[in-house]
Length: 116
Length: 110
Image (tube, rainbow over all chains, first blue to last red):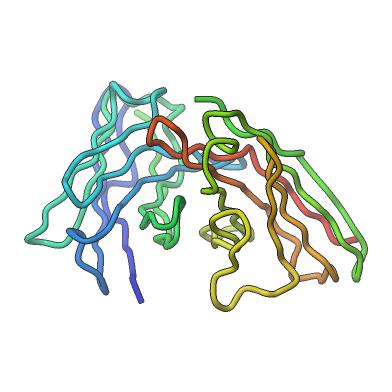
């Protein structure tokens, strides 16, 4: 049973960088594909990016210039950074495991608010 | 990439069947059999209910089924129950090695 837990600041100032970490248990992050998804309040899901076993990454084209997904295999966690944030980046952020062409396992989500 | 197109809302009475459509393009839904469907109750994380167009994960009710024709995928829920009331999202893998979601459909059980 794979478990994922997001952690990071719940409040980020406009123009600064949002950073979140996803701690994984029950699986080695080196063996699977991992993703980040976000959901603004009352709105739909938006896929942000993924990192695959080789360490290569893919990103949502609409955010590609601002988003980075990375991993630390020694700590068995992966991370999200989103630069130059605005109020439009306020959302619940989910870390997730990608499998069979979609998202198989989800973290519980963490709310990040962008405000001064 | 543009979001997949889903109806904003559908409704049905207990015991009835409903179908939610998910329309994409030749670059996503039409390109691969990598369409998933997710159920999300208020305040909860999404839960995948269908993967690879028509496969049900262990523990998901047989009342949920998926299909695809061309660039449109569909989720059918038969024998509607109160517990089915939730938001439903589709997703598809794309030819750019990305994932795109639908805008979501609110299912109301009358």
